[in-house]
Image (cartoon, rainbow, N blue to C red; front, side, top):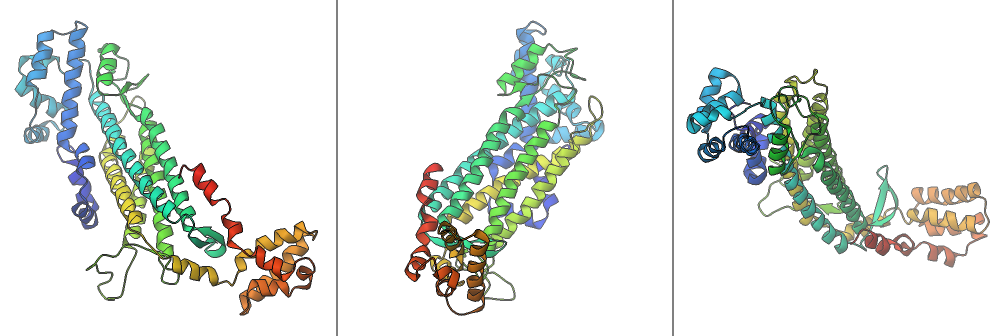
Length: 450
């Protein structure tokens, strides 16, 4: 909102839950990027750099550019008051700066349009926000690497459709998470050059009243690349890609928050969120220890995915521009970056302090009485010459008896005549070994650099 601190607006719009988030984990570096103070600082720098670049090529007097650099300043409250009259934030800003600069201000905004300032500023803000998110991802992966190595050989049951499948290790699960956030890191790194793009090309992007050399000089000094071609605005596919990458990363956070929530269910209880002394889980039930962090992360991911859809809707603007994207971006840019920053910090803390219960993993492995060895036996039977359909049905017969009875799969396998004809009980027992499932764990870790 013009004249209003966007970070405060995001908090107020989010209601009490977002305020609690900010109160508990202050994120000053990310939030500062989106304040009106920081926005106007970038605006002033762009206007000043443009004047300096024009002075360098002889368009305006050098002494006036020096005066603008020396005297250029603004006052937030004054801008807000002027904006009440002008109903235009850039004009209000320019009027306020002019009151401090004096006659040399006539050169400010020379040949420029509002979007030259707004879009170039947004590019700076997105670049700075992405730098913070990159650091968050690296910090998260550092914790994941350590905990993956810690549980590298800790057996647990792997599940498909929520049903016991075959054994894995908890270290492999965390290594998978490490790998996924490695792709998140790659996406953000690959995205950066496409969002570090500014423009100072005038009302419809033709440089009619501003030399292209000015655009190049200003962008270079801001750490940006000048757009090869623009209209009055930088095309919104860049911003949509930024938001969709944030949404994909948020969805990865959601995926793992959901995983840990499932593993914390009372009937499973293989891992659990850290529960501090004095913490309360329920206003009604004193015994409760709920996965509130994971639930919070899953909920916030929905907001960021919704913001990505809004960014995609911003891509089809009318002709050389309309203003329908602007109000949307004033909300979704600070919201999504601040929330994802918070989510990545929170997920890192969740993983770092995650309570892991190997004894429960072992208990859950025993629940199905060895059913997870069924494929090993199936493959050995086909190796010994049995037709696959017959082998499958023989092993399935033993497996169904195991599901319904009290004895192990090994015993039921040995009692199947077709199986017993090809495998001795000693061979069956040897095949029913976790070692078969974990023989490539070390190689997988090496491949991931763990």
